[in-house]
Image 1 (cartoon, rainbow, N blue to C red):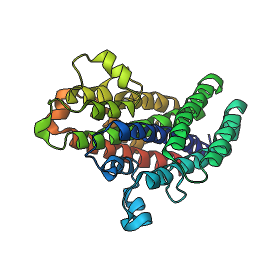
Image 2: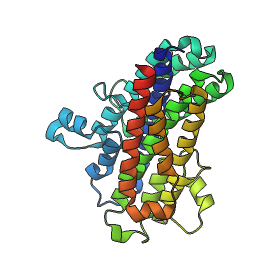
Image 3: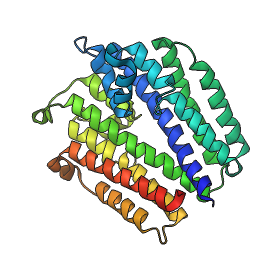
Image 4: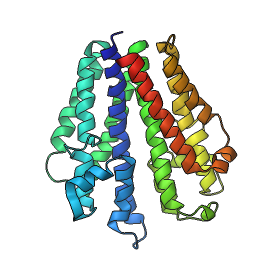
Length: 312
């Protein structure tokens, strides 16, 4: 397979996954604005979204001292043309990478790519109200699920599919670690509070932003214990958005691709596997934030090793 095709399949998956995850985050946060405590400022409610999407500094550069407000964040995260992580930018790059790999995807997938881009590019034009944005976010999640269904039912299981799976699972693991790290820190700013009874809506919002609320409630019957939430999101092998689940699917994709003579990539992935081969107690003994920070560093190293050995 040509390196540019592999690169495009990898990034095609990453951009679509990022668009879907961002839409879910924004949708849940809009609901949380209604349910959250009144003493939380608008800025406190939206800053985590900018931090998770690594766009806080760009937002500050663009809006200066104007502060963080709902209309600005909605526009910036959803349709911002200068924001490389905005939903619109991700969808545009998703289509561009799909076009490069056009001969490796099915006709149905290509038609869906164009429908997604044309439809949402049009709908994201103009000012976004909270009500209108909420509808768009729900539809965005549905379109991502539809496309992945087409991929699962119509694409050949070869190297191209493996690179797509690798990119999607990498993005999911990275995004899940960021969501847990930032939101957990907000909910538990003081380590002495670990294990205490916390606000129901905060924990529910964290799990709903990962589509794991119902699954968590079926798995744990003791309420929202912080350690249980972290264990579920990081180490549960049956939860499709857990970090360990994503890492295992990355490993399956790499087996198809093959890592012969790819020492840097193999070593970098082994270090990630080592990170998820731990227990809940081991994570908390060393600190959840520190654990997630190391994991993100190793994910970044894996990405650059993969790019150097496969895509260059």
